[in-house]
Image 1 (cartoon, rainbow, N blue to C red):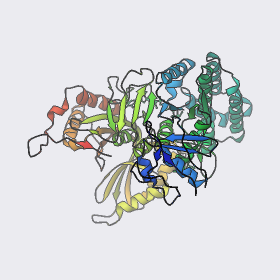
Image 2 (image 1 turned 180 degrees about the vertical axis):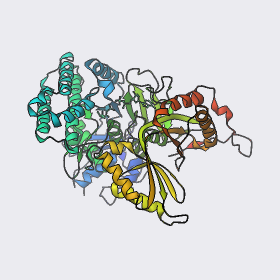
Image 3 (image 1 turned 30 degrees about the vertical axis):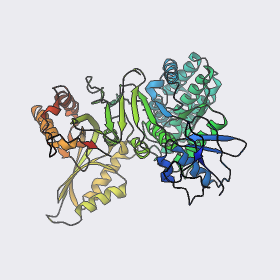
Image 4 (image 1 turned 90 degrees about the vertical axis):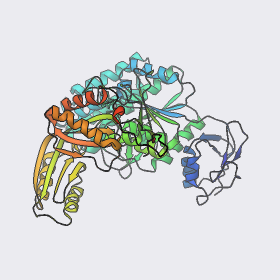
Length: 570
Ligand SMILES: Nc1ncnc2c1ncn2[C@@H]1O[C@H](COP(=O)(O)OP(=O)(O)O)[C@@H](O)[C@H]1O
Ligand SMILES: N[C@@H](CC(=O)OP(=O)(O)O)C(=O)O
């Protein structure tokens, strides 16, 4: 293996790439067995020039690690020499609300141009409500008959929106026309087959992101900003074959880094990447990462390229103290840890995709949530740690449409393995469980509604679960429940619980289950769905609108009398 790597610091002559963390150690020829990839990962400030003598490129960041791995995996034997080109600095993801119209796309382009010091990778979602419209169109196609498929109302809405956008942006409509024709053909195909499999559903919704990115890249090119469109499933986003809910596989990171850097070095252009989409590793078919999955696309690129920041641009001033559609007086949360953000997303805050924090946490890359409608607002910055000294409650999250199961063993106390048996039934049926509270002979738990949503046979599945559990237990299935999660500093759980229960007691609400669990940041309780919104509003008033709760804290003190500073680490 003859690849050689050198490192360059911006103002210094080329020094030699440390294969350990020491910057000034000598250059060594690299071979898979000699490269300490974990050391490379730490070297975020290193630059890695690669080339074949004729064309020479340089990349920066911990993406170097992925490039080196990719080179080695391909068994390239080229010599690496110096150049001085700028790599990518950040990823900017714009959600559907940010690119909902031609006007919005222009504003987003302006916004990107207001950061000339950045060299961003752009990730886009489908325009506005296009994903919902595609799903609705697909469902209608199943039963409307082939001859009516072209007339589906949502198809017309999608066509009209995209054609109008292209006209208003003054770009060549051919960039999207073939896609719109193909979409119509696909709906006819669904109508003919009279079925919409999960695989076809993913292919169908992929049109949304394929269209929006093509339009935006074409627009940037017309205003003189060189841009290049990418379909994520063509540039190395490899996922499991779980259609509608694909998991990003490890191979994605080096593949995406290599493709984006290679293209950039041959011919620099701003990459415009489709969010939400991937390619199933066995089937080779288009997959999606679950609703809101463009956030995960952005953090995956952030980690792959070792960027300094991941920005997700939304239609709100950051992560708020609760869903603003439930309670208008929600306010932005300036700082969050990855743990808090992940928990918040997992327990239902639509603002972030539940899996999106994982790559950011692994790459230790800060995530900034900003408002594309109000760029001056500071937004929320999500990092590994933050000062928790005064933090009590951060945000209140509501998850609706929850099914709860009370499971009591038919045998009496002391039954060994009861919990194991119950959970093995869920494992066998592939159903995921959200909140759990147990005693030796009984369990209360909730089923993850998003998992149920993404699959069919919901009622049959529930019946089947109950049937299996009834072999060992008395089962009570309770629908129409909601989970209210209090995300915050569980170090102060007594204060949080005292206040929360006072609020709920005052409202006459009976909590049906509570779980604090092992999480350092979340206390959840289950109430009737009909009461849930009122509870969130009352809790918000009590925790965020009635003075500084931190004054109630009894501060732990060191021997010298000074207060202990608390840091929460993921
Ligand atoms: N705690 C929260 N903070 C901010 N927004 C929230 C929260 N909970 C729910 N939301 C909803 O999330 C929306 C933003 O997320 P999303 O629709 O995925 O944005 P985008 O499509 O721009 O990526 C907001 O408009 C808001 O209604
Ligand atoms: N368009 C997809 C993916 C996505 O991330 O969208 P948004 O960024 O608008 O939430 C969806 O609606 O689920």
